[in-house]
Structures are given as C-alpha cells and as structure tokens.
Length: 495
Image (cartoon, rainbow, N blue to C red):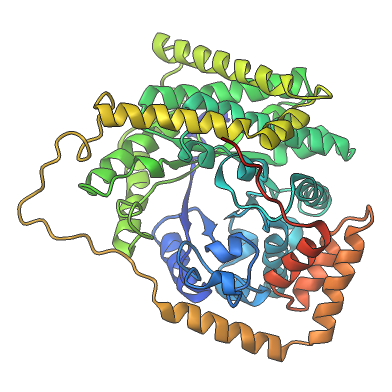
C-alpha cells in the first residue's frame, strides 16, 4: 500500500488468539505483546459467535473451546486488563453479533478511561461471507445490513480510525474455493458494503478507507502473490471508475492475511511449520499490512504456548533475516507474476459479471443477495472443493505426509496439545449468574427494550445498544431480543 513497501513501516504481527475464559486469554495476549506482537486479534468461542450466553443450553460443551467466552462487558474488562486499548490496535473476528460485541469493547475502553475517538482496529462484521461460507448468522441479510450500516455511520462520526468492516475471503477459501473465487467473492462483498455506505448518504472518501480485507495465503506460492496484487488493482479501479472515489486513500486496498488453516495436516504436524513459513512469505511479497501465522498444532486444537511462539517467530524470522523488506516490490516486473496477476484479474472480472447478471437492479448487492438465496455461492465453492478432493484422492495433488512420503519418524513423541478444561464452562456460568444477581436487572431489561424500540425507527441503534451493554445486559439477551424482533434465518436447501 505504501510506495516504500516495508522499508518505512513493517507489517503488523497480529496473532489470532482466544481460548477458555477472559483471564486465560488475557495472559496469552500479554505473552504475544511481550514477544513482539504488534496488535491483538480476538478469537471468540462458538456460543459468542452465535450470540448465545454461556449458560444457554445450546452452548453446552462449547464454552471456551474455539475461542474466548464473552457474555458481558465485564468479560471484556478482564480480557483487556492491563492492556491499553487506546494504544493497541485490536481486531475482532466476529460477524453475526459483531455490533453488540463491539459495544462491549467500547464500554471496556470507556472503563479504562480511553478516548474512544482514538481507538484503532478492525471489526470483521462481514455478514455476506457468513451466508456464503462460514454459516454463522443470527438473522436474514437485511437486518444484518441495517446494523452494519449503523456501525459504519457511528464509526465515521465518532471513531474515524477504527475500521468497522473487515471483508473476509479467508473463510471462503477455507470452505474450499479456488484462489480466483476467493478473490472475486471477497471483492464483490466489498463492493456491496460500498453500495451500503453510499445508500446511507456517507461520503465515499471518508468511509472507504474504513473498509479492510482479510485474505487466506495458501501454498501455491506465486498464485497467492498474484492474487494479492490483482486484488489491489481491481479494488482501486472499481472504487474510482464505478463508485466515484477520487482520492488515493479511498482507492487503496488494506488487508490482513492469515496462513491457510486447511493446508495444515494432522499427519507429520512438524511439516506445518514449513507450510506456514512459505504461506507467510507469499503474503509478505504480496504486500499484506498485517499477518497471522498458524501454529503447527492448530489442525488438532487451539495452539499451545510453544506452538504459538514458533508461529510468532516465523514472522519475525522473515522480517529480520530474509531481506525481503529491503525492496518495495521485489517481484514487480517478473513476467510470470505479472502474467498470473493479469489472469487472476481476468477470472475475477468474469465472476463479477456472473454475480451482476443475477441482480435485478444492476447493483452488486442485489446480485449477492440473489446468489445467497439461490445457493449459487455455496454451489460454486462445493464444486471447487470436490475437484480438489478428487485430485487429492487420485494422487494428482500431492500432500506430504498424507498421500506421499507417509512414513513416520522412529521414536517420535506424540504431540501435546492444548486442552480446555470443562471447569472453564462451569466457572463462566457461575460468574455470569453472579453478574445477573449483582446488576440492576430492571435497568438492564429496560435498556434492551429501548434498543428494540430504536430498531423500529430509522435512528442509529448503537447508542441504545451501548446503554444496554453499560447496564450489563448479556450478549444473549441483546441478540435474543433482536431475534424475537427480526426472526431467525434458515438457509434454503440446495441439491
């Protein structure tokens, strides 16, 4: 994104982490920051991702297992204890209940005494990719877009440095898409959020810089580099020529990268260190602004402390020892990379045309919504995943330790993985019960009811949601109230 590449500023080392309760995750964050991490990236557990409290019967057995459990603003207080939120960029990977979780983050920052206007970071919020790939939503698309529009307005007015949407291709690729599909589906979703901002009357020069992206970096080294290069070219051209952005800042594509989780193997897991290093180098040569490197044991469980440190050191080794930061664009002008970039761009444009052909009004948003409703996106990803799996099973696609070079190392010790104790769930539920007892229950319920009333108007919902969070309303109470108002969404069957 910068003319000087990484010579003026290195990418941000932003390791994705979260497990157990807020106290345990806080300790991991302090370790990451002390070891050279440049920012935080919060992983939430499945109940939180689905807008459920830890004591919800549907949360049984899931609390703290794939991320940190967050039920109220008090959990956020603990999660960021002794971490200066005003001085630390914080990314949160959550989409369905992203807005109430963001409100909890703001309240935690308030309680620290932070100037909210100076907060910086990224909220994923990308609901399109949930319907396309990850399948973690609360409502139908329209109410989610209402909340996202309110979030965009609120951040533009009150927290200008904070990026309210991280448009995610990572989950699309992890679901089985090709690199070209990841590129095209992700940017199409980004165009949809541009159209949402414009429909709200927001200034594109102001809100476009608040849109960021999140890509996967897979093992086809040069293809991945070309994908990142093509993404920047396409985004700049469409923002300028289609949506009318005139400033360079509004046309720039900002993106975070995570190495490919689906490339990791349970067989011969030490090989994952090499896979991750290659993928990380592709991201760096592709110009990423921040990077997460997966841990070698992440295919089996949440990373152990040792594996997390190796993943962190992988980035630092690339940064400090390889010399790739000395040149702004080391692969610029390579005939192969330039040709691949052109080809990735061509394939993406073909997919954009197919999406817009599904649109009733010529907008990208209408095409995306129709593609979701018809199951077109999931069908395209499923076909790509089938082609890959067939190549793997036939042996045309080689994966070391899986279908080639499958021997074991004599005397190799079994991998010790991180296990989250069932005590975490028991303690989290007890803590939540105590908070409900200690709060002003009438005030909390009244604040949630007021939030629902605001949702029936054109008024921005964030101030009312913040009041509910300040009254210690739980995530489940807030989301259940909105589910009761807006209904739940069931994906249409596709055969």
